[in-house]
Length: 179
Image 1: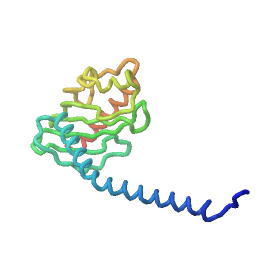
Image 2: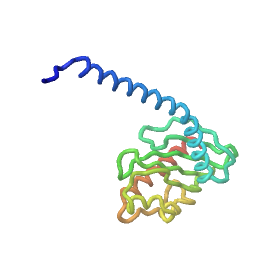
Image 3: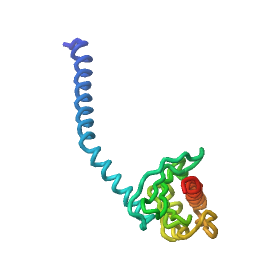
Image 4: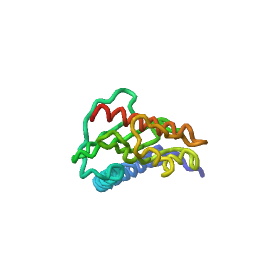
């Protein structure tokens, strides 16, 4: 004997059950996000503050500066040291990994010299473009002015290192506007 198809039990009931499961799961995820978001935001703010002090250690604290940057600038945020030690620039530039895949931070003192720069995140090729994160590359920027005289690219990773240099040049362009 064959069982006849019942629209209610064969189609409607499973759809309703899956819909209820999706609603409950979404509500739980929203509730958990509401609990964890403030913690995540606080942690990210702490990490950002530490990174700013890392590239401009003479600063006591920072105030974000609102500045109108030219189109095409890679600088996303500018912070001024409250004690006049200089500025910190958050940079999102292109990388070999794609558009806007390299996030940098650069500290420039009041005299227009780089104190330090650092890669915060990137999508560069491991072992090649990722060399822009290494001290040998980053340390050549310390003490440099806007000319970046003597800064060399990395052999085998010229795209990544050129993108990094373009990001730092963008920081100097923003420095000229805010100083």
